[in-house]
Length: 147
Image (cartoon, rainbow, N blue to C red; front, side, top):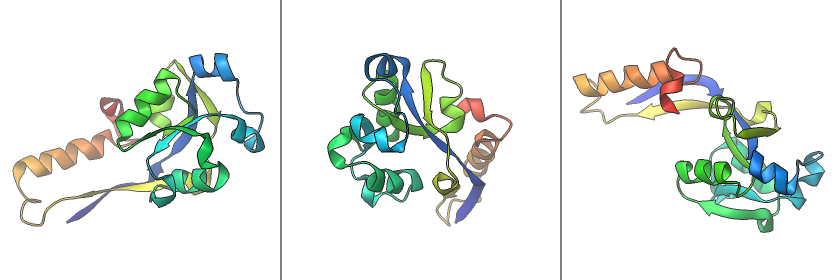
């Protein structure tokens, strides 16, 4: 079963840590991105995430200094100052040590879906988990619980 958690709410922006900005500065505009370091998934061109498809066309692969297969590793690397990276807006805005580099663009926004097994989707614990995730989705009443 698929569950539509939140429409158009996976809004991402590009962030850097204050440490990165102190060392490397902030890009002047998109043409200046090639003089910076990036944190990205292992294969941004093969990603379904709109921000990473954009990144694979806007920035040469030589600029990606840290690659990860885990979203949390990307987040930790951005916080540590390894490079510029995309984070959900609600995460980036809640962290004082992050600096917004590029604001969100309309073509970077995506829906959030959750898939559950057809034989399990009506069980109590799966339903409670779905309630929690829907409440914690960006814009939901408990989105800070996901930080």
